[in-house]
Amino acid sequence: MDWTVESIPDEDHLYRRVHRVHMSRGEVEPTAFKNYPAGSESMSVDWARYSTPEETHARASKPAVNAVLRLITGEVRALTQQKVEHWPQEGNRSHSEVIGKKSNKLRLILARICTVVIPLEHNPQETQPSSR
Image (cartoon, rainbow, N blue to C red):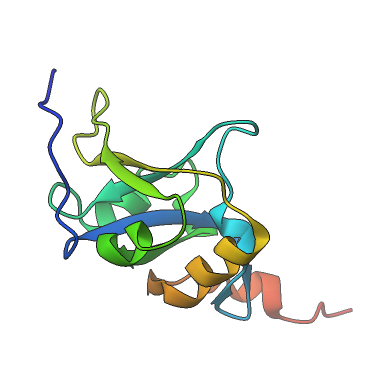
């Protein structure tokens, strides 16, 4: 299915799925904002016009070990040398990219301006002491 590439308004939201290794005590670590795959010039997000946080979450291979973050497009674009572009893919009309080098400082800013909208699921077996 082919979808037209559209311009994402600055006021619109973006959703980013983040694996638990990039979370600490419910807070997002700056490592969550690396371009992927390594050497790539961009980071994948979903445009809220065509996705909900729950749909973004469900696209993870293991949703239980992923959180979903929300960013505001205009705030991301305001960062040094970052572009946000709609890049729909087969099966995901919302797919978009944040294009540009992600320095340590920039990743720290992204971690500060995002909001966790779907936290990691609590798994009691992971946090309870073992009984002997």
